[in-house]
Image (cartoon, rainbow, N blue to C red; front, side):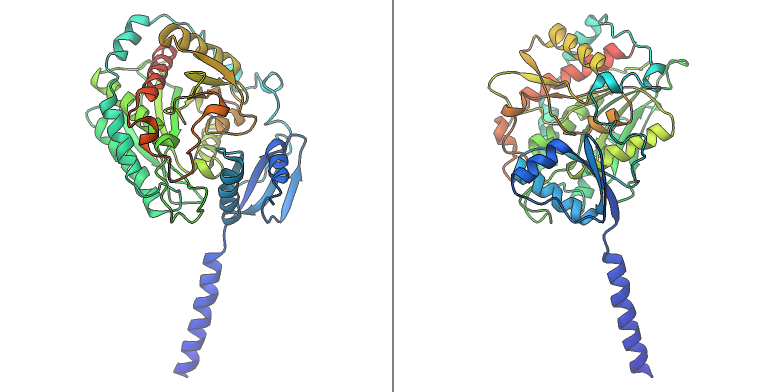
Length: 406
């Protein structure tokens, strides 16, 4: 009798483990440009149980494990960030064929019509004063700390610890501010949290309007989807998080009291389908939060040959992009160019998809960006162990924030 009970218990345990091991189903959205490129490389997509085909993109019902494998393969064969998105919900018929349309067909939407911004540049003395506080020492230290993690892959213990380190670092910076708080955003599909730091607006009319500056905190090694290999992610995207961290430090030390609410976000799981930002942007839309602008900092510390920086013009907001261009010309005097990703290449796309104004300045034109990303060689020495190039983006982000917060 005891033997029978033991056998039954073992069988039950095996069955239970099998259920627990089953990967969760998700919807993966891939635009046709990426699909064609993958097929041209004679590589399959992944196993899926259902597909909804659209004019601009396809939506596949698959599993988290399959999407993770695809992410690694996509990074490996196309040498690019992103290119697809992951969602827990089946796409609605109303948005199929709409989300990847050109901007003139997508804007203005009902959400965008509620926003009335003039995009004035009128705080030059204030902005230049804050520029004096920008210093590489603090930025370098954060990059070095984040790259000390073996990997920041979203399903690894180190990846979870890295995002928690970011949150605790930000919490320490704002501990003297009663108008600031740090939250760990818990995601449905994984344990790596996103980190959201909020400085509440002081204007009773404008405080419900939110300005967001974000970047992803995770990393990936395209040769190893199981996260055994090292993935330092110095440029992709420790530098972006380091710059955001320094902006927080400067705002606190200068005692800046924003009119609008400001949020800084370190997104989880960007490298595997923009999962963190997709979930957050969806939550904000469902909660009807009035986000007036989103700036993405991702890939900002590798020096290209031709330009100091590029502004991504597709799948971003035209008016806000033109505002950024004016900020570059006014404050940075940098050599820059417009460029396109032609796919969902970073977290800005999640906000764009939900109808928010988002922009994405990058370290150079696409063909000249860091060739070492998604490998064990994405190390700080590829930028000469300094954050000089990233500091230009820190100044741009500061100018964006201070000029927009009027």
